[in-house]
Image (cartoon, rainbow, N blue to C red; front, side):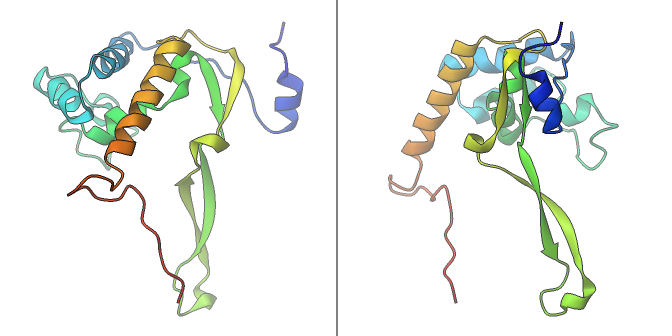
Length: 172
């Protein structure tokens, strides 16, 4: 029996695909959530994983990441894990889009190329049905999102010495 809504999702080009948890990496994902919710920061978590010789994502899967060094964990890798709703057992669509960008703005005849860009989280589509075994529960995920948001507000340019989270460009 197919999950509810599968026909509509298929019509939109979406498929419910279940993932199989990896025995080596699943405990690392749980550890990241546990440490973050216990109060550790992204840098502290990344440093701890590297110090414990836990392979970072690019080191764990070199075939998919030949362009990365695979030396150590980064804050951004930890953040990506913390913000990925797939760990709740749900399928996610529309995380990225392809924008067409001119190769040379001074010579439009050169054509354009596709550039992958992240969509804002409110544009992501997350399945209601669980499609694969969850590594964390919904409450844990939502608690992590709230904490990330709270920490982001604290460093959003409102405290002395902090850089703004987003940049604005002026129209010429």
